[in-house]
Structures are given as C-alpha cells and as structure tokens.
Length: 180
Image 1 (cartoon, rainbow, N blue to C red):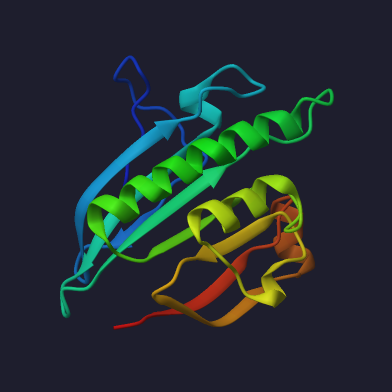
Image 2: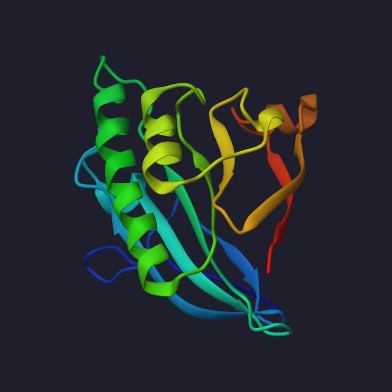
C-alpha cells in the first residue's frame, strides 16, 4: 500500500500540494518529515505554492536510511524570480544540511527548480549542500539531485508528445543506489 505525505495549510485544512511524495509502506518506514514553507514567493501563499517536502525513510529490509526532498522554486515573474529562487535555494540548503547533520544519511532530492543547472540557485545547492546530478539530467529545469552515499545509475528524461501535452515539464526518472 502506498502512502503519501499530506499537506495541511496553516489553518489545519487539507490543501493541494505542488511537491507531494509517495512511498511504499511495505518497504519504507517514515522516520521523520516536515513541510518547510519558504520565507518568500511571488504568489504570496507559502503553504500552497513554494516549499520543500522533506522526509527521512528507513528501508525495512536493510535498516538503511536516506533523506528525500521535493521542492518547487519560483518561476520568472516580473524580473523577481531569480532573487526569489536564490532565497529559496538558501533556505533549502539550510534544511538539507540540518537533516544531514541530524540523521547522517544520504540525501536525494527532486523538483521543479525553474533554473538551468549552471544557474546560481542550483549551483548554490550543489556547492553548499554537497548535491550533484548525472550529466544527462542537466538540460531542463527539473532535476534529481543526490549527495555522497548515493550513486546515480541511470537517468531518463521522457520527451513524449502525449506526456508533454499533459504538463509543461518532461518527467525525469532515475535509478539510484544507496552505498554502504
């Protein structure tokens, strides 16, 4: 049975979530999780649009742990997007580093970063949080990032007309391996 982390807005009511994550309860145990609203966003509604979902999972069969995050940084709006993304990436780096320090396990992250890989927000995450990605996962604005302790075995960006008709993003699939 799959479980998902449910978003609750500041009033405690169920809200829709841009950065959801699903996991298999038969194979993974949820150790900790939180939703971290960024301090700024173009839309002015932190709980609904711009935040990071972060969770620590334990693989039931092995006891190995890893941290996973999903996020959605601001897009370019009226020339303010780059500034917003930089602030959001700084806050994401703080979260990643806090989880690395507290749980001492590898980190895997996904998201719509609304930035090219060479842009400052992504490079901020790469340099200050020790994240990387496969070279063939660096051509869009959506990435699968990972820290030391994770090996990226394969990455596929699906560029299919039916898929692209459903979204303005091409799905990114990754096969990752946790190292001992």
